[in-house]
Length: 361
Image (cartoon, rainbow, N blue to C red):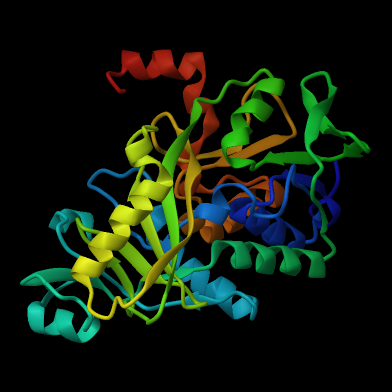
């Protein structure tokens, strides 16, 4: 086995999670190869609303992990000058108070100062001043550039066709251009992660969960920060575009992304002053990887050596902190206690039977 300083690691997937892993691994001296089946950030990363927040419900098993997400992004921003994040704050209303742990309750007068274009400001809202947003595609490129500065190699349009095995140990991957040897292979391919794990006879209950992502061209800057209400969830992009996120309803014509974009634009015009023109530039479905229990799956695959998995729904939010913690585990071999709720072996038949015996779900 290679030492920590020259461990050969193949990262499968060049979305923001894979890019963060590559950056942190390469920075610790690993020989990193990133393999991407398509373009960089061509999966769900490219259709992410990319709101950096720490919001969670009561009893969230990864609350501490979420709680460190913003601080980890400030660290990354200090390390990577090309990583641009707008720490504009977020204003939310029409949500339960216990869903906004880092926020402060503000009055209508304060709301008008924070978002002067709101036509119908509520009496109160939750304001999270520390939250922000980023361009997830640009952030992925910045992380990969940082990894390459430490010697990492990045190959696009290079799907993984299979794995090299010695007994129950993964020793590399197979691609159309040849085999690549590795001391560790990391599965970070979003919705494609379950298919890769199945090649190693390790089923992972990860499904593709849809959400609508919309980008508008507008004549004016309409919102100052991130605005989340029952009517709309919008923010201004760094390039001046207006970004919106909507729930996926079904595949009927009335609920196709283009139709939802029209209705959302109408809601924006009803809720905001200054909407003199609004044109849909992009409306699409983003397919988010969703583990069966909603909790990220991070850790060494059970029953096979040399394979590590990193897949989660809040990938943009957790990319910085999980990238650091997972890379440290891979390099040092020491388990991070914060990642304990995320281990893939919780889905093994033995663990499921044990949980049932204990009365756990």
